[in-house]
Length: 465
Figure 1: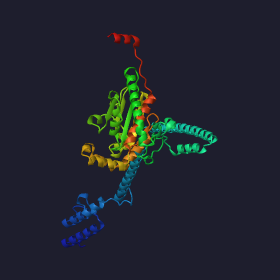
Figure 2: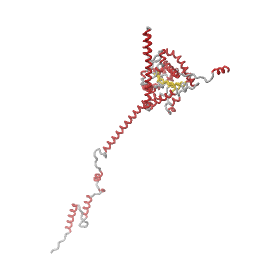
Figure 3: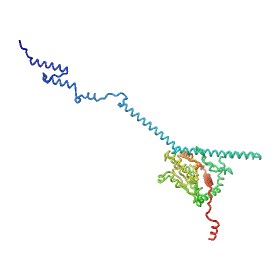
Figure 4: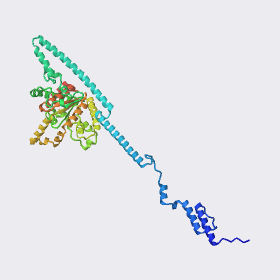
């Protein structure tokens, strides 16, 4: 029996190639050392590496695919568009809240500028002023009713006597002239009442700066002046003596406010100049100094107050801090609102301490002011009185009128009322201020103090000396 022939080298090589192809297709590696050659091993290695590539050898596309996150839905938390919308929404919210805060703060400032720093206290002051105004109005109505009855009775009596027209004419004249200036009726109506600012809203357009309440004519006023001046001199001496020879604390403070050229200096020269200078304390306030600015606005006012027995005169005053401060915007409205309340408290404390406060607003018209400024320019002897800054303030006339209106409304109190003195006519201004001072001193009624010695004994001693 013939022995089988062994495989030739060519047959074995062909079989190995066929096995390698089969393994490559199936993904299985041939056993090591069994017919494997270099090419078979390389194919197996290539197949395995392509199937399980390591991260280090991965292609750039594979890296990008792994690094790229999944696309977030529109408006999701991680979306750039969503973040942008949220940021803009937050910014709009902040803007709205800031606007509301600013609006609330502005409203608070306006409210405080109207009522002062303590709204409750300011409202109480206003309520008291309204109540006092109502009481004054009721009293005036009662007086008017009594006067009407008296006039009617007088008219009836005259009618029986055969002269009815005279009584009627007298009644009509009393109604036609709101500021009676003649006879006994004038004595019953002091000038301080005729010029006093009533409680409530103030409109300076209602006050004629050329009007002359309480004086029928210039001739009549000038005829009364010698008697008024003599009376003023006597009362001032009695006031001074009561403080120096006794223990009286009574005194008078005259406050003069008004636009430039309204006559503050003229009042001092023509009215106060008639008083004994020993009992006069005059202070003309200018722009505050550095030392005065370091204190509260009433500090320099307190230092200039008249002492017991003195007549003090303020040429401008603490009201500059709510007039020029408001018009020139030198102070915040909130602070000005507080100052009205502080001024009222300050003046009430003065009155409680024995001081009579006479506040006069010298009311001048814009045309009259222009003429007076031109007169200063036309006369070289008056150039020293001319101030170019007066023209700057003149351009702010409406603003100053409004500032005076507010000051008169808020600070004309029962304790220290304002008086509007028409100042277009210099003769009337001097007449009115003189009468107001006489009436203030008569209200005090100062008396000469009694001596603390025996008059008879002292007479003998004088004769024997």
